[in-house]
Image (cartoon, rainbow, N blue to C red; front, side, top):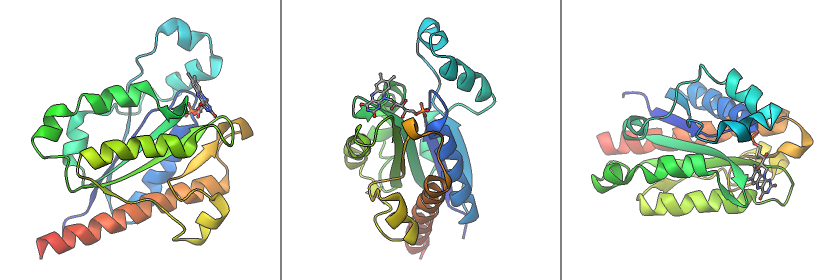
Length: 202
Ligand SMILES: Cc1cc2nc3c(=O)[nH]c(=O)nc-3n(C[C@H](O)[C@H](O)[C@H](O)COP(=O)(O)O)c2cc1C
């Protein structure tokens, strides 16, 4: 059987979600997927970026990361979206990308894929679940098969978020547990997509 195509599409201003996305990609690759790790293009005003040194630095560091295109969604069997929370919701940069997918959605090309999401916030109760749930609204509209990590692996009892991997950026960069949870989320999504792909091919 052909390998599962996994698109990991994320936005990150200061690098937290970028680190999670890398770990998700590692997990997906290890599970046998062909992976496209793609960042959402930055559209914030230069003045806003320059006002935050961590933002400007990450933008520079991620310059070589390929930018997400709608073709990545069409190509994928499984899509994992990553975003920092913005007032309990996904970042506008990711939302604008999603909102440009109307024609793809209308063609039916987004239906039947596996979808999953991960996030970061600055505080522990700053909106991680609501951000992931907001992305789930999109997945319903797309006719997606939502695959959350739940408590289906021991790491989930340590990371503690069944909705999707999340990290409190205020505590510093993602540590071993968050990275392991992200790898697991990538693996679980790919394994589910592989089973679907095999079943559909039979
Ligand atoms: C406009 C804006 C809104 C934010 N809203 C929240 C929020 O509601 N809750 C929270 O805990 N953090 C909030 N944050 C902090 C970001 O979520 C945090 O910096 C981000 O998760 C770090 O991820 P990154 O390093 O990948 O950019 C907000 C940040 C900005 C700039």
